[in-house]
Image 1 (tube, rainbow, N blue to C red):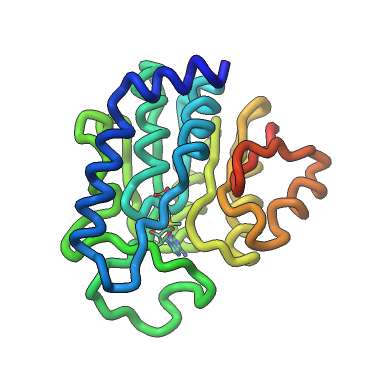
Image 2: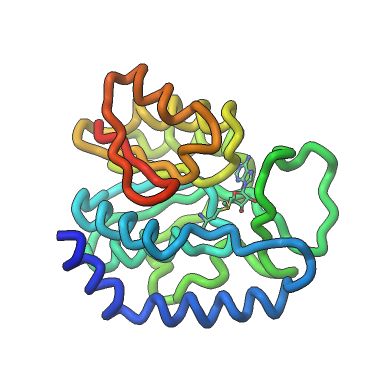
Length: 216
Ligand SMILES: C[S@@+](CC[C@H](N)C(=O)[O-])C[C@H]1O[C@@H](n2cnc3c(N)ncnc32)[C@H](O)[C@@H]1O
């Protein structure tokens, strides 16, 4: 099944697009100490496969940055022919000064080019099924979930502190329908994911190096 979904990703031309946009990102932010901060291809292919399989009508994600994971998710929704993705992101714009404490200290240095919006590299034809909420997930996720009610999938890739991951998992889980999935990147960065899985009595499914999911 995974091989078939991977063929769909390859046939879509998304990879070539992302490679080209990755070059643009390097040219724009090179030397600033910022990175793309993106999930890898393996993670993207898994994310695509999971969303093709689950066919979410309502998908939620935190952490967009330049838009890699978002692009894979939106490609899956486009191919499904249904569903909408709601993303929350507090972007770090290269060259901009932020108040101390705006970002978690242990945070990676994912940066978007000066003057751009989170998800700037997503192919425009994929953005019809997308709504972006700008701000801290700690502020924006609860009202978003309240508005949405029941969701079919949740993906964490924002601030990888224990507190933030724990907060997001606990906020999202009650909104997930039975049979929905909670995904997370960087599951090894803190104890939040394995501890949350243990509390819910669920066995995590490891997808790629840092990515795993919990079925509900
Ligand atoms: C690892 S990057 C996301 C990478 C993206 N998923 C991808 O695959 O390309 C993390 C993003 O979360 C943002 N972020 C950091 N702290 C946040 C917070 N408290 N709330 C929302 N977004 C946050 C960062 O600025 C960055 O845009």
